[in-house]
Image (cartoon, rainbow, N blue to C red; front, side, top):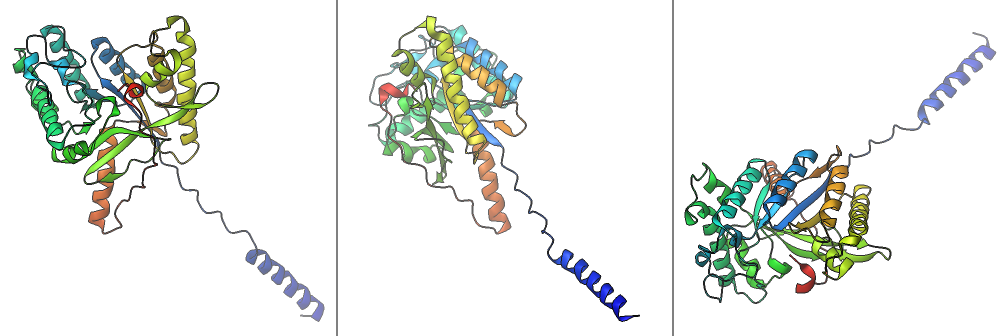
Length: 356
């Protein structure tokens, strides 16, 4: 081959090789984000119409809720003496009792429906007393009252027939939220001994990953920005009710309050959804405060978010079972244990502000 031809061929080969060597490497795959978890719960769970309304919302959106039940609503005036709160005489309650045997029967039916639909039936104690000064023994007594009354509610009230599997529903309770979000050392000593897997009585400065220790997962209600000034408020309807109207009904402003609530929930959701996707915890009562403003906001929010393919509106129990499954798999596989981050410290909400 002539010298010139050999030079041209060599140069062409070098250029081709150089192109291959200096080409950009393929981009590394972007890790998929976890699904955004939203945990919605209801305290006391009294009004039958709100049981029905919440279950209908769940069916529309595919959500699973947690119902923190107060067991005095499974006792009528005739059976109220079945409950004796710590340090008080029998038949005492801060929130009353069911109005009639029929009301108890209707509520038991709703609990059965909700459990069969996959919702989480949890404990709010019985008489809605502030247990901040209760000992471990006091809390164990309250938990025992809740378990006994729930499990035997049909026979206690003389309601027949008792549905098959009712005792299984009662024994499946693994979660608790303290009335007024008021906790104590005795509470956290008693919860694991009483067989609970999670507590949802905490408050945090914002959404946090729930830590697990001593067999107990501890969830917190986050403070979220709300209103024109973006002041933090606990993500619970009662706290919004106090913020908006001082705890007094203002039905003429219901639409305004509902929109403010929705905007606060949606902003808190969007921040996590677009970020690291820490679970968002929201809490409600069955009471329709400010003419239902907060339930209207809930339905609007859930209708937009829970239906997203990368969002899961699940119960506290669902979340804990999933986390425990991950821990068991890691243990069996010989991998490192699942470690939960330390929760963000937060101011303790006072009794008047918690509303739980």
